[in-house]
Image (cartoon, rainbow, N blue to C red; front, side, top):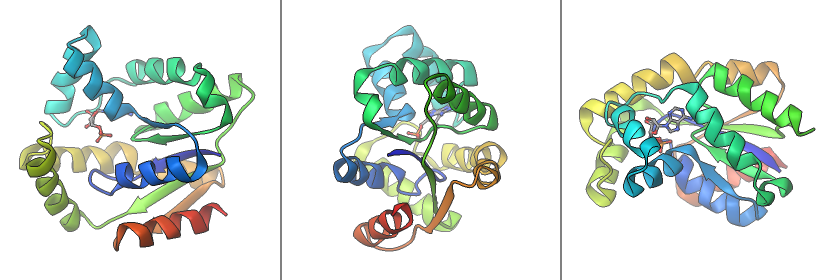
Length: 186
Ligand code: AMP
């Protein structure tokens, strides 16, 4: 199963991704997580990423596609995968299609978790208290939402055009939402 999880900041992608990973036994690849790890190891990539992340901006597509290309080459990816937080722009989606095509592969489904903005801000401020993520403050959250609508939401039409978009209602208990996802993937 080759899946992309789509959704705005705080839509619950990370939570559902962890459950889907166990359910399907596939690797969960979060570009945000890869960048946070690079950041805490203090690598060149991490230093660069920090500037963008703290401003709520997206990193350049070439950098992200380079990370994904490398990850796709790892042996555990052959049985399937779940991307969370990638792609986030049309050029990233086109780049992913190309990377997969070059490997005689393609996506099975793109699941969009839809949650109203007003719920997202509260969720993210709560996460800031629990996890202490540097980019979970009110200003950055607003910017990340703006960036989501400007750059990432158009991916829904892109994948609708490819006939693989599945939208689910992202409000409810974690297990309920998980069931909705599993149902649309059947
Ligand atoms: P996330 O954990 O997915 O919310 O990502 C946190 C931050 O990492 C984002 O706000 C961006 O600054 C950066 N980031 C993660 N994934 C991407 C991506 N696919 N393209 C560009 N920037 C990204």
